[in-house]
Image 1 (cartoon, rainbow, N blue to C red):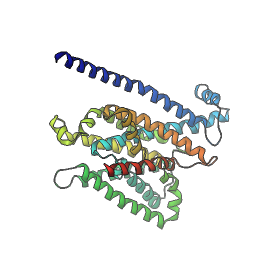
Image 2 (spheres, rainbow, N blue to C red):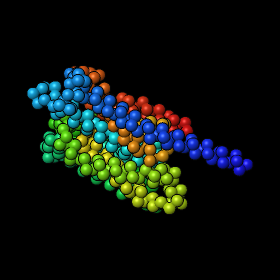
Image 3 (tube, rainbow, N blue to C red):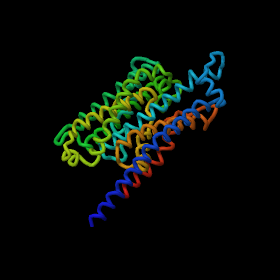
Image 4 (cartoon, rainbow, N blue to C red):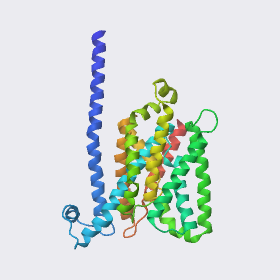
Length: 348
């Protein structure tokens, strides 16, 4: 019996070691896919650029070359912004699903998308702003205020901020803020013309200066989120289990919620409200890596970045020489998945 138990333990250890090795090997593979997607984003567009010219522009820039200028000033910033926004949205969605234990959760469940949209629409309507930099400031402010309001409403009553109460508060505020945004756009045609492309979600026309303004928030959010991997794994098993293991669930939820605000708010500030990335990516990642958030979070970052960069390339090529906002493309891909997820949840 002792020999059999020892063999079973050895076999289990070997399986875990192989699984961990595969997960470690998978990270550079995902990095390679992201690099390939970014190279495609730089090469393809209204006018295709040969890979040799792309490489030359990156390593031996020639200011007199039109292609080199296009690559350095337009396409490289666009690819970098798409990658960072996708990574942030993927991690934010994984965090939301982990702390709420709701498979259909994404940053939109906190009303962050609608809060950011109302912030921009209100600023355009009242202050007559037209700068993308100012869009980013008001979008971030609207997202942060909305998330704070949702958490406050979800904390009222007995039991504190439970996942169900936060979900209900987020849904209620989302409906309210969406109605206010729609009302302003109906009443003021100029505001609609100013923000309709931003509201669809797009990385076109963004430059690195805009990204640099939110990079500190993105960096802090990603670092803290990755550091919370073990705690989120425990929390996803339930509050009672987490508390029984000595975890301070209130602190973990608070830090995770702060990360969601930083990541999703910064992303929306730069690229507008892009949907479905935070919903689709964590589920796709779990299919390959399991339920350990120490692996789900880094893989969600890489997969989210690759997904959004590839979606942006597709959005440019479908109706070339014109292009669709990338938010429309992610909706076309994520919408059917959302329907499938709802049907699976109902059956379950």
